[in-house]
Every structure is written in structure tokens, then in C-alpha cells.
Image (cartoon, rainbow, N blue to C red; front, side, top):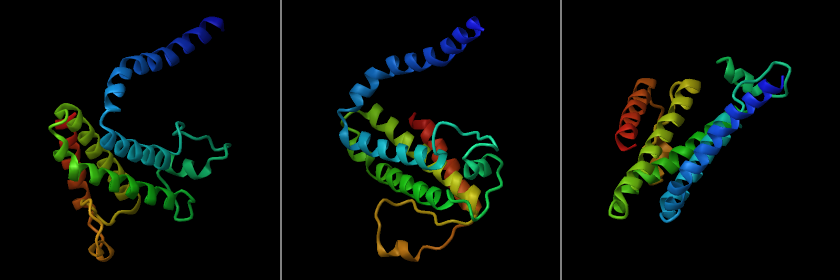
Length: 178
């Protein structure tokens, strides 16, 4: 029992500490580019906090997370109290990603590799958010511009195929930048 506990502790915590210690120098340098790092932090928080709810993606039927359980089982009802939270959270993440995507090229002179890394993450987050939205709702509004104008109020629903094309394109762009 003791050996199992020690092994579990080792396997669980050592990778986390290594990730933190190895990633710390990169994160320290990222603080210098406040505009991009703040925007990326905001959209990352929106995706993690809203779509996933927390770090436990799998729920047990006896727990108090029945609304998350429907997502685990891919059978979400329209009465699920997380639906609107996910809708707004995904579109908030998409808005932040669109802002980074629209403006990262103006910062390429600062540190091109880091700026492209952040832009790649924005492309990934936008693709991931649209994946959740199209999977849950099918036809959805497709927003790819950072500017919010009156035209956005008149935007219609896009077919899932169009959404998936953007997802693939964004993932390819993310792969190229990261």
C-alpha cells in the first residue's frame, strides 16, 4: 500500500513540477509582451473555466455534477444549465482569439517566434471553441473578425461544414505557428 501511494505521488506530481520549472523561463519572458499575454490568458481562462468547468472532465452518476455528466455521455438536453454558459464562454474565447489573430502581425518586430506562438494558440482556441459550439448546436453564427459592428447583429447561421472548414484551417495555422 505504501509503495503504491509513493508511486502514485511520484507519477502525479513530478511531471507537474517539471512542467512548472521548465516552463518558468518562457513564462517570465512572456510577461514582457503584456498585450498578447493578457489577451491569451483571458481566452484560455474562458475556455478552461466555461467549457470544461474544472479539471475533472469525467463525472460519476452519484455526484453533484449531473449537468457535466450529460456532456461526458454526449447526450446533452436543452434543459442543461451549462448550455448558455458554454455558448457565451465559447464566443467570449472566440472574440479574444479574433482580436489576437487580427492584430498579431503588428507586433512581429518584437519577438517573432513568441508572437507567432501566441497567435498559434489563439488559432487553436478559436478552433476548439467552434468545435464545441458546432458539436452541440450544429448551425451557429460564424464570427471571424475582431471588429464588432452592427453587421454582427444581422449575421445568420452557418452550416456545420463551413464551421468545420474553419476549424481545420485554424488548426493548420496553429500547427504552423507552434
